[in-house]
Length: 166
Image (cartoon, rainbow, N blue to C red):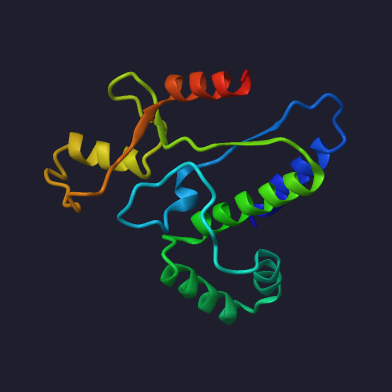
């Protein structure tokens, strides 16, 4: 699960002397279940007990996993990736509060490079860019109120470094 690495990092941070804060760089898509509204930089309530959900997932059979996945989709998350990202943010915040580790969460959007035509992978936005560039796709249907945020990597890193120095 996406939860374990972050929790190990926080347990390690607990033993670091002179730690100013733990910077948790994640993704704005952890809140992808907030449909058709602005997503603010905050933790949104999950509506379930995280520890109980982790136990349920870890002890589930393959058939039960499929049911859990279907329930995750019904709850508004596009996939298990965004669902577990939301879970780990809440786990990190609870752990930081319990241990007095100052926690900063940084939520970049889709990150791209500021040079036209540069793509590091043919997935997600990169795949759409390639398909449109080749003329395979000439029209991209979407809801008029859906917003696509793509932020250049240099802007993302500069903002991250600025936040880290705060």
